[in-house]
Image: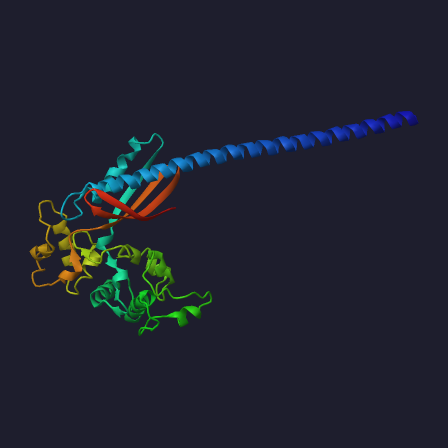
Length: 325
């Protein structure tokens, strides 16, 4: 009887051991399977990521090619580069699985922030234009906030340590919960504005009901506003007498085929603009800097490349900077 009990006991221990081994083997197999599948998915994602990058780059370089192919002595919203979003819709014929959507923004149609100061003093023409922009009812800003923003931008980019009336220098930024130094040099990227006193994320990026400041200002420009391409809100900033109605009429004139836009005085041809003077030292009809935004899409994933290019002549495009998102 004792021998039989011993045998049963040994058999039970062996069975438990076998079960434990099976459990361990199953766990190992499951983990190997999970790991293998994860590696496969990672490899697939890496492959798709590489494809996405090249699709987005194709859109970027295609846009740059459009810019380099423009031989006109002026730039306008009737040019091929301004219609690239329509061309982008055909990109699905170039790629079996994906496509790109690219667009080009004329930086010369925006207010040049780095031209706000000459040395340590205001460039009054740019200052007045920036104030008029921020004073548009779409932004909904009061006079004190506008003065604070403009003075603070000046203090951020001028070389001295003197605080403007409503601006900010090192003592202000040093007092913040997360302190940092004032730049006292030109802006290197437009996102630096988020570090400037008075400029909130809502002002910079815009909201559902208010426009984005970043769409109407630039740090990449020769300093002149191309009236052929500037957004209507920028056109209204060129002179306080230019109303929304007049800006819409200017836009209608410049987008109508056949109108001559080769001279900055074309705006005088628009009804109601005859007695309004836009400073000639502020405007141009030729652009040198452009922003290209190209988004590649593949299998419900996307990747965007954004860059600034300079058109040096009708056949030469120089990439100033770019980033991948």
